[in-house]
Amino acid sequence: MEKLLLTAEEVAQALGIGRTKVFELLAHNTLPRVRIGRSVRIPADAVRSWVASQPGTEDSDAYTCTETRDERVSTTRKPCTRKPAGE
Image (cartoon, rainbow, N blue to C red; front, side, top):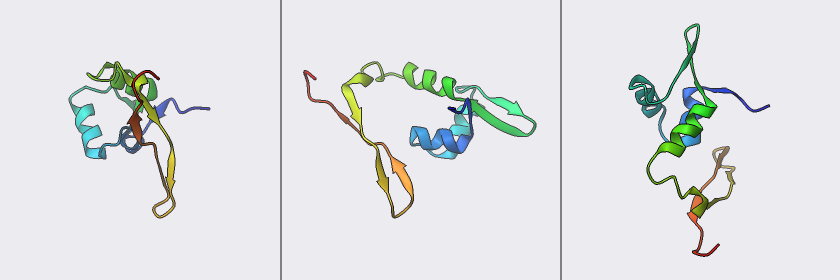
């Protein structure tokens, strides 16, 4: 089952930004948050909606992303490159 709520660290990793920047987005109410006790979580759907609403993402189908694993640091990356015109 896919997670419904993400931590700031998970959002930062998914967006490729720092955790501090995620907290800035939360502080400016750019991203909604859910409080569970003292914990802060961000709805996964809200992150997707926010990304889709950003300028320049309307042609996201023009990119292809491939997952790569870096064994040196035990992380997975998904670099994206622009598809050739006509594909």
